[in-house]
Length: 157
Image 1 (spheres, rainbow, N blue to C red):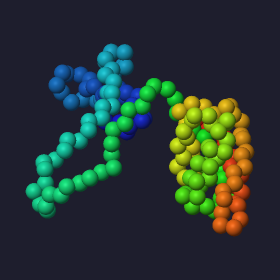
Image 2: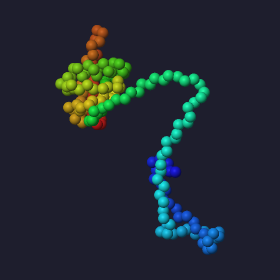
Image 3: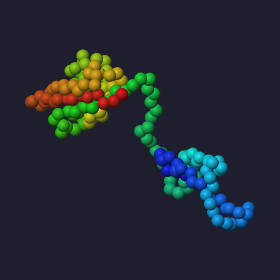
Image 4: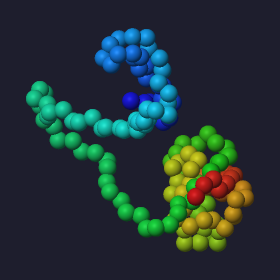
């Protein structure tokens, strides 16, 4: 079997005894045109699950896995750069939420999804094309408002 992702090596002509059939003699390579060449196709066989365990004790396991369905279309990925950049994720999310409300003409009825660091996703593209856009966002603070600069750049579709 060949390593996954690598093509098979070229076939090598098998040595054939010369002389009396069945007798061992001098070995000479057979001409490649006389022997049909079989190509081995790498096949991946998933290992089978072993039996259920008998040791230990059974537990109930809950996982944060759930099925979703998405309508057809594209998801647009944007790179977000917030300056100053020493803010926790919670503050970054608050900055993006304030930005979406403050620039409602730019975002319209889009509801972007933000990971708290530097990735923003939308269902429909923002009207900035492939350009970079810088927006100024002001968060009201205790006594003094904080001003942030948010750079948005389209990455992928």
